[in-house]
Image (cartoon, rainbow over all chains, first blue to last red; front, top):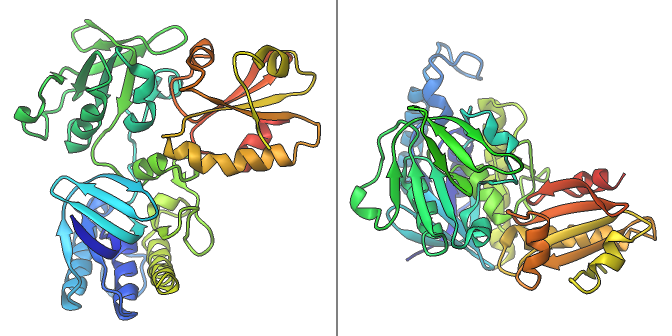
Length: 290
Length: 102
């Protein structure tokens, strides 16, 4: 396990901005990121200060990483799987485990996460976003995890000792993990076309119109973003956004959030501002606990 | 302070209550439940007889959790006249729970 003072999850405008302020205050953070995020889809950015010509989101992201490199800030490309709190933070990624006193969540937010409208209908009645919280209610029952990445596999492994049967539903995608890691976990690659059940979710209809019975469905699409992590830590959420104080702090000591995951304008300008504030406040927090 | 509801006192304190009752289903090992706990306590302190606030430990009272179809924690149910009038899942801000009691 690696021990750090400050970890920043995400290297978009909020994460990089937070890192720049922290390092200049004498607290070099470790930045963990997993690719371009929302910037990948921005072909041309023209509405940000100081750009004489449009720049692509990818280019801006790479520029941010170069800026961190120039300041010797360590940057790791890795996928976040879970974060737990016991006075300090333990961060599990697909490659390693880290321990840190302060943490800034800046991994953005997923857009259009759910393709099945019915999922919303069964939230709280058979649909869950947190295996570690709700697995308890599915002891000896048949559950499925929706997703095709390491995050889905991680959630399935949390459920596997509790449930009678665990299936990962990739919904038409190829699994993005080694099949050797599945163990007793089942894999279903067919697409899902609808979710059904009277009071609670009880079956899914697959693309060939076969029925997939289940007692519960855990949603773990793509990679774990800030809101997935925040929900499990018990941070207050509103409309899938993390509620933060004016200084980007949260009810958990040493935990700050910045950028798209806190809602409001999903704009670079706002992410940069919040990142700067989070970096500064995280350093002030570390100084106050010394 | 928030009350502790159990199978023994549930009918009397919740179902037969004259005022709305906010019930928080929680567990000791659930991090979001711990984060919600101070909010539940605040609502209990501020109730002033207008409503009741209490908690059910799902480990200690699995039958009550099953009876009300609890599949996520924390889940907050608001009972009015012995019936479930509203529901909220997850750690939510205080104003959201206050709205359920109105």
